[in-house]
Length: 259
Image 1 (spheres, one colour):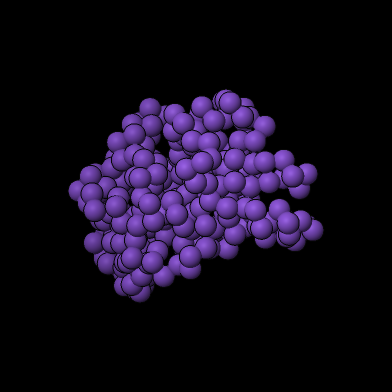
Image 2: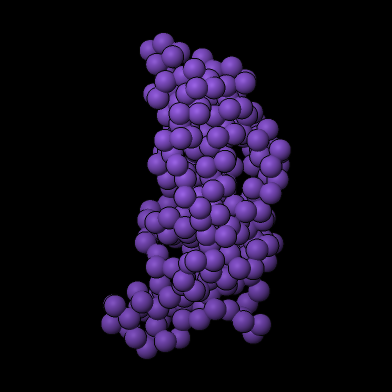
């Protein structure tokens, strides 16, 4: 295919326009404001001279980069994982110019309309994506994982959602007695644990909850206390990765050993 058909013959100025427009739409979405997609697309077409197909392709590449860095994406612009390095550079420039977006991507106004516990859908863990050095530097530069871990509201919403899901799972499987004992961890529980849960055989589960508004490939890290707990009690230690919390609200499970 030619550059015009696949959207890859973009100048730096063109990329600045399409990435800036994408971020503007994302800011509105996170603020809970309506987005006139048609108007945005007309503006990008007019300024760049591109047609719908290459614009859509490039928006998908932007979604991929934002997903891998750990930010939410626009739901009607699915990721295209074969993105150009120039797109990564343009996204980095836009994020650096709008540091407020990084805070909003963790605690947007739209999040406060969520119920105290969001119903979760279980999914399989994603397959790892290859990471080149440039992408790793971008992930470290914006460090969305630490921002999410430090936000008490986001963490609390993830924990209450996991508590509700675990209790419902046990109750539906004939163990309402165990469901009643599922709870958030407190000061008397092992350090590094967020939720006390149980297996159907009554075996304890020490759950660590990692919550993001981004997609399933958003990076996260364990704290020193969490790593220590996984080493000390690997049979009980579990991770619940909660993601897309303002969208489909899914999670997947992980357990030791960790690579």
